[in-house]
Image (cartoon, rainbow, N blue to C red; front, side, top):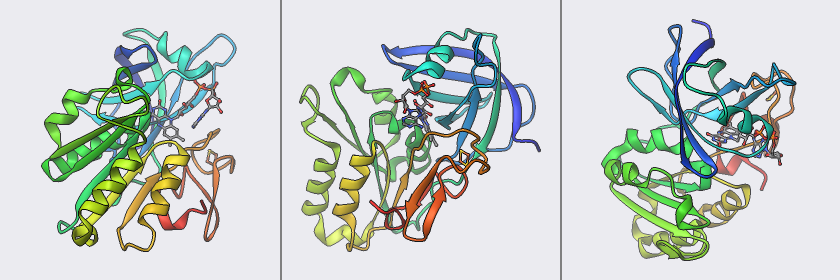
Length: 256
Ligand SMILES: Cc1cc2nc3c(=O)[nH]c(=O)nc-3n(C[C@H](O)[C@H](O)[C@H](O)COP(=O)(O)OP(=O)(O)OC[C@H]3O[C@@H](n4cnc5c(N)ncnc54)[C@H](O)[C@@H]3O)c2cc1C
Ligand code: FES
């Protein structure tokens, strides 16, 4: 089955000023995606007929796929303007997925900002077993909070400005949680996606504690299929391609 397919936009719904939820109906049978994988999505502009950008699988629905995206620059601004019924080029699912740790581990899911897009389907898969730590700059930036509340065991929210939940970084809440539950640390696994400084802070917190921790890395991508080396990150075993060997890495493999 080819990873390249065309898909019809069923909905391109604005959730917040800078965030949309895109619902796609593939026009051909697709390879089933796993949480953590991503798609290269084509955005047709007058000057960029071949422009593709990487986006995580947000959710697999009965009819198709959903992508949660933040309007950042040229490509995502074009995507925002694509209406219902438009047909776009999609390549995927690409990359690896989040490893599912043994049942004895309680999964702690740590999302910073739009990092929730990559982790949402993982949270749905773990369901009641999962504890989610979700941090954004200000209350208005939370996305689909009610849906998250319904699907996981516990939800801890933080905002940089204190407008909702704890004030501070999401990693502060994770640190307190691990300190309050020291005797159970060996029973946790951690999954994280967010800005690199957040992931670096997480590493300094979990290293040496024997907590299996997986992070989804983001780098600018050109091809998405391992050919251009543009997305390489430094790991303890040399450079690795985020689009091919990743995007999910063990936190201990990355040079922070
Ligand atoms: C594996 C992977 C999964 C991703 N999943 C999602 C997702 O589910 N939802 C979502 O909103 N975004 C996601 N991103 C980020 C998304 O690809 C970028 O925001 C997007 O490519 C920006 O395109 P643009 O044309 O709008 O911006 P550009 O005009 O290309 O760039 C605008 C600014 O964004 C920066 N930028 C571009 N690409 C990235 C990137 N990959 N990471 C961080 N900064 C970037 C540029 O350096 C520049 O400063 C993902 C990235 C990767 C690598
Ligand atoms: S984007 Fe080309 S090798 Fe990863």
